[in-house]
Image (cartoon, rainbow, N blue to C red; front, side, top):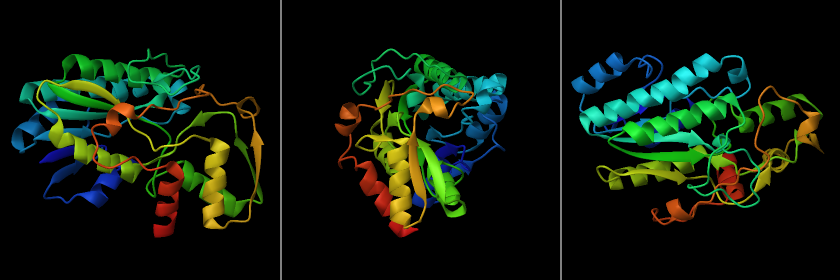
Length: 278
């Protein structure tokens, strides 16, 4: 049985759509990953063979004023799950982020590049990575970027709503990354999990293929939905936010591609597939 934490978030809900309750136990906030004794007791009483940790504090801007909470969940919570992995000798898959990089690269980031987060959120997620690498029995840390789905709040759902409400939108065009369809990520994780060997701890990068700005992403969303809304590209400096964001956070997928049977889809293809299925 797989324990999936953070089951009410967009990735957690995506897993719910892909696997049944006979294969996984889905737990949201009622299984507080910052409470070691609670998680230890739960795992000891259930036939948990692996943990997929999708639980996280992901409010990037709010983390600047709620830093203690961000670190408590993203760092301490990850540490607890790593210790559970170690105690019960079970594999852990932990989701991390492109925001552990500062965005000053001019080529896609590989797993061995030195992190340098420029936001509280990124720093808290990096601490979680360090704890998992140090303490877990076996683990994949999977860094991803610009995650979207039909669940919860994300760029896709926000842009769709705003475009329907307004005649025009201004979208940042000089921050570059890759949108990632949550279903593609979840399917990749389920393929990787059975192959995680005992004692192995490895960082992997997964996003869809291709490159986009937030403007490019928004344009495709509006175009595929056939919404009449004018988009204006703007520089990030014209849209100041409490948290700094990397200007460039393309992730190199060479390593994870070698472990997967199917090629990673291009972000435009996955977005089209999702919107056509809505």
